[in-house]
Image (cartoon, rainbow, N blue to C red; front, side, top):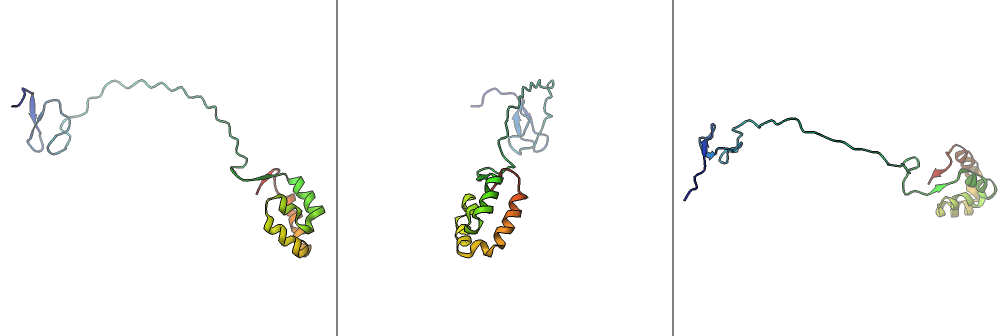
Length: 122
């Protein structure tokens, strides 16, 4: 028992489809152009309240003060004081055992710390 539904034929496959169909139910092709209504009214209420709290884009990393690290390196560099401050305990132990990499490591670290921004991320 078929209801009294108005139908039409698909212009591609000839199948009987509902009159208001835009796509053929048999072959899947588009049989009618989409009806264009008036342009939709778009209301945009954007307010940007984002506050960037990243420091140099380094999220989740420890921030160290340049001057604290510099003075630790200057006075306790031979025992790795600045390396322990940065959270690098392995390097700190190496500095203890080798006297700050025989003094050369301390000198290089002093120069490197001076060239870093304040605060710097480790």
